[in-house]
Length: 230
Ligand SMILES: [Zn+2]
Image 1 (tube, rainbow, N blue to C red):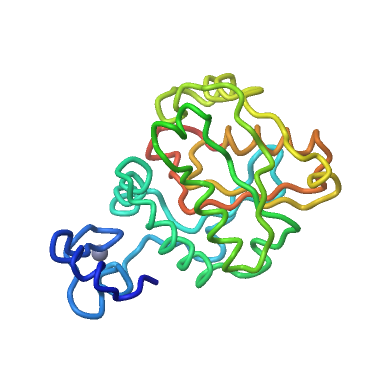
Image 2: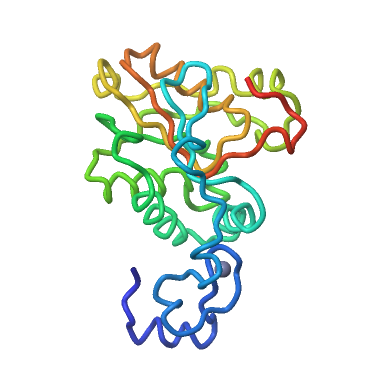
């Protein structure tokens, strides 16, 4: 958590701290956690039974919370409004809630952005989550995939079949010596249809990974999008 330096106090005058989730202005001790009292007890966090889902190529896929309401608004600010420090609050929450066996692995990696998108955004939101999470969990973290094709954003493409075609062969494996025989934890901020995570898992398994498990901060309820589960 952030230190109460003079710079932060000065910045606080111009940018009073807001809740990471609902974006309300924070009071007193709420400022330290960056979370308001209401959000502390009302986030749409899944219970243990609700967290896993079955997706092709993945040995498990765990998500912490539902991608809805203030969680969705928060992640959109994290990705598109430069609020990269949110990753630290997100990974604190993941560590405090998840059980160790849900993320047991040899190495943590993430679904990388294309070079073009990284340039326009300035940071890779999945990388920040993976690095922060791995550090707090005492795990190794490495870039193991490279995006070689700039695909249309998955959020803007239609059906499951279209998403699958859009993403096919968009990634290649890196450092195969770190992949062979390993259980890899693949992280991303959200999972919608799972096409991207499944494709990345397929690539890692083709490169020799023993198991690929996925971990995301949030998961879209496909029924609210009018889509079927795989
Ligand atoms: Zn709040």
